Length: 128
Image: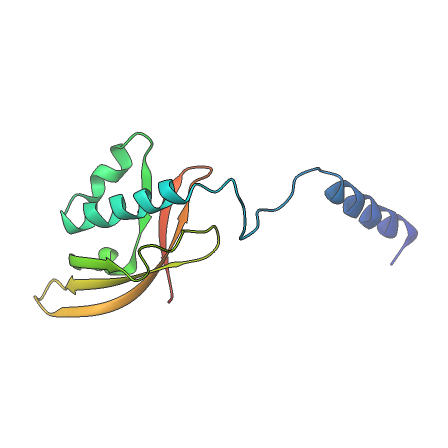
């Protein structure tokens, strides 16, 4: 590595370390657990009611992404696995979903959802 490249790399490391911004942690006290839970419930209720398009018109809007929803499944019911557990940043919330596919077949699945509050509200499904 040339001296110029080494100096550039060192400068980038120093600047990144001096930005003053700390990455969020799992124990981030500023994370609003109640708002995260309300956001998750609002998204799941909208799906169950067949009104997920309304989420984008809320103030503030909620971005909701779920593979079963995208495939046309209807949410018949749901149960948050640990309803008293606080929602945490970067930690999924497990939910039991009762689904009906477009052909009428029903299934119960465990899904994990990540809830983001910034920069906007989002509920994103991941693998359990």
